[in-house]
Image (cartoon, rainbow, N blue to C red; front, top):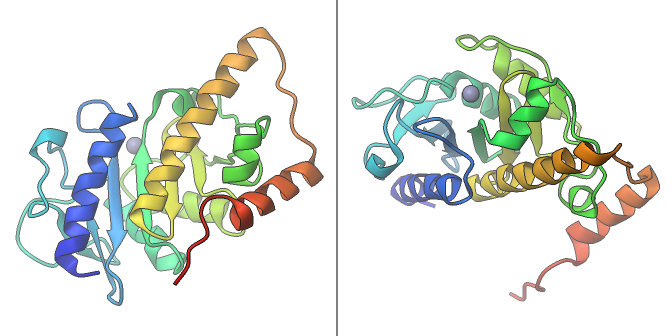
Length: 220
Ligand SMILES: [Zn+2]
């Protein structure tokens, strides 16, 4: 994929955050790693969703420093950069304060795996990451420490919101959308009783089946 195509993709994926109701005002951001380069593309800071264009996406190095003149990158850039530096398989990162996932964050609770859709997509609970102040590397450290070796592509950072990762930006956006979906259902279920987690062996079987047998066979 060319840099221009990645700028277009990252820009367009921000519309998905709006479409699925994951963001308010200018909160939330998507980034994508530039294939074959130590660079990534991310949303500019404080720019409204209607004003995003492929051209005003910001290209940064893996220290989160812009490599060309233009708008300042998202205030969450350091966290994205830390993930790209420490998780080489990650090609996309998304951050939102989506409502129900952030309600779990406000209670500092992981989301228990009580739905087959969670077992499919997350392979277990959606883990809780540490509380971290914005402005240094501690958010990135918390994301990587929580997700490294975990099946889940999303983490709920304590008192904050969601960071989701994927092999590419679209996969990361999907994880953010699915995270909010199951956070909402489990939150609602909690209102009338305790959640009943799915046994570990069933979670593992569901996750494995989803990864290997779901969807259409791709023929070359
Ligand atoms: Zn945030």
